Image 1 (cartoon, rainbow, N blue to C red):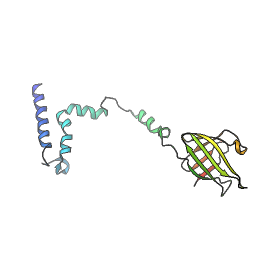
Image 2: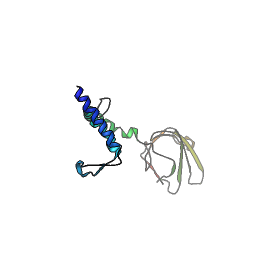
Image 3: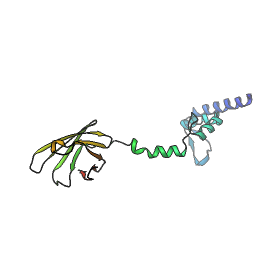
Length: 168
């Protein structure tokens, strides 16, 4: 046991001494010509504590836990849930009313949509946003008060009739 401790101390002192030099000139594997001080210091845990380094390498985490393939697949498939929020602010074109743009602004969970009728009358509707889901109140325009829609990078799709406003 004492001999192992002496070897560990000797390795540690050797690596510490070598890390203080400006450049380590020796034959290294893989055609590497120089070993920087940073790389030499990084080798201290591996050379001084080889069993610990090997154990950490096999389990992957310092606390000994590991991520099995089922958990990794579940994490990868949850990207849509964790994904970045779609920015809905901007101008949209309704294919049913060409040339009449709709402007959407949002602040937190609140959404405001403004537009112009064919006769030039301005209108405004309000709604709520949660992630990419929208709940809009079109009752000021004579429509339903609970219109559901989803937003993506291309535009907004209304779930009731499948129509879509394309982002400009």
